[in-house]
Image (cartoon, rainbow, N blue to C red; front, side):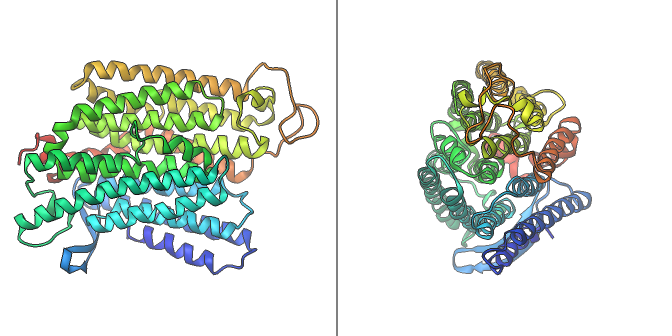
Length: 506
């Protein structure tokens, strides 16, 4: 059933391309219907699988021969981690369309690229054949390039090209590592295989893992926004249209983190140990650097862009702990950040920028947006406190677990990363005050006639629905974290992760 999340998304692309060019309303309805249906399939399929089998077990969805000569198969499967991420993808997809209801320029093409990106993301999270995973991973590059280059703003061609080049460089690092692993595994197994579960049982030599692991890990971590390879992220987020920013932060960055965990760390557990402290150090630098740069930004969207780099640092720090509580926190942080960052970008891009035509705090301070757009102000405040890690929201549970896991291994670096949380409070409150509740003298909104009380376009029903959906998701997981932890925890007790958590031993 879960495979239909992929098929429905690509069928939606086909349906959109068959529509007349000027059928903007029909395109929106088709896109939303497709995303809602795929999201429903993800929810129902995930719940059914959890009820029928242990979430820690990898359950095969479909497994068919594909390229027998190299051992490639069309192999889709899922465990609790995959289930959580496809549910996240479904929520992010629906919210992104609701926040893009105003798209008028080449509407059907916009949503076709959007659904193609979503289909590729579903494919990555469900692929347990390395070649199939790589193909879906590469498929996501093309639609995200065109979404930014065609419908973006603020140096959109530069932002799109930078994102594409960084993605391709990372992909080639991954490909080199996977080819090397395939060749060595073929010698041990006696046959060609790209089956992730089968390869996870192969014992690669310590010397081989020492140089292959960083290739594969860094190749994926580039897309996860790891410092110092993070620079595509703020640029890409700012250049992207609202839905593009929501997907980049919400699910595309998770593709990188997922690849780090599912592929690099599972296949090369001894290599992880060799580079554990380096990963942790880079993660902590990313946390502090992203938060510090966000604190001094004048562009509202750059604040959220750099905050994503900072919060993804917690994911990487959790992965580096190599203990169950830290890894649980890292995976939960993927979900939490995807929901919260998507909401923040929705507020900044659609609710604020599309109405005021500016993201500069110097301009926004005099617009009294807290009065003109009260729903936007309240939504940003809720998303902001969720991003800070206020108890009751998903961010608190996720980051607390990461820090607890990190304290057991890197106590000094954990204390340093705590500074990033404090700075996060500062840049969030600063952005909230400057954008919505400043005391600056009133000025007319950019592009508007009249005084500061000139009414802006009211927040629409689709925007309200998208905001409520994401706020509710963060609250539900913040109040009832067991809903997802019961999916995630059993995975790290499964045979696939046994060598990783046992120091590389069989």
